[in-house]
Length: 115
Image (tube, rainbow, N blue to C red):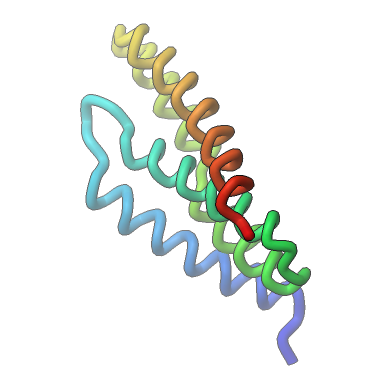
């Protein structure tokens, strides 16, 4: 029997592996584009499945599990502080703004395209 814990756990495994693959492929030392990408894409996916009105099991697997481990507030916060500490004040501020605005716009786009 698949329990809610299994759904969240398996979803989390999928999301964590995908986050690693995405950030490993596109992360740059000069700006945390990998973290930005996973946060915006994950926000879109979570918004999309939510606006689709899928069942609770799908929300547990995709939303709580996969998107929960794919997106990363902690890495975003760390990246923002590290940019600031390195004297990249504008990049630090841009990272904070672009992550927030990008995530909100991604959810808005999901709302527009969900049937």
